[in-house]
Image 1 (spheres, rainbow, N blue to C red):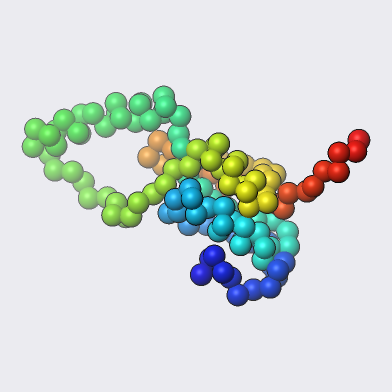
Image 2 (image 1 turned 60 degrees about the vertical axis):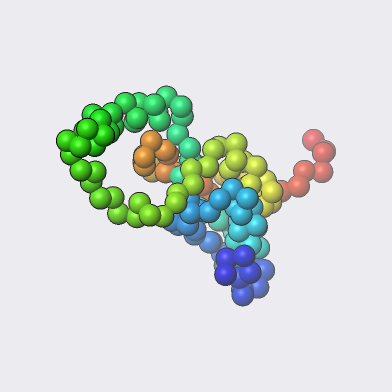
Length: 136
């Protein structure tokens, strides 16, 4: 259970969470990331689907227009897509920043892996937030 891991605090030097967070709605992300942070003594590496820009999504819709029209006119059958029965959540950068902060994490680096359905597949390297004492 990712919300109640059975490992002690700081048990792992590095925690990698791959191919999971795009299956989780926004309201559950902070608690899950907080639990991963709890068991991680060092770096937390997560893969997410970051919501694409309006222009990218519109371009993708335009590219699919011929096949969509063909299906509507029954000129072609839609191709079966693996995993299409599983809901994917594409999180905005604003959402990710908010849930990282709520989980006590800060982003050290973000790597772009590629594009999926008009959205960015990204790898975030996170670490526990450091508290600033306000002194120079």
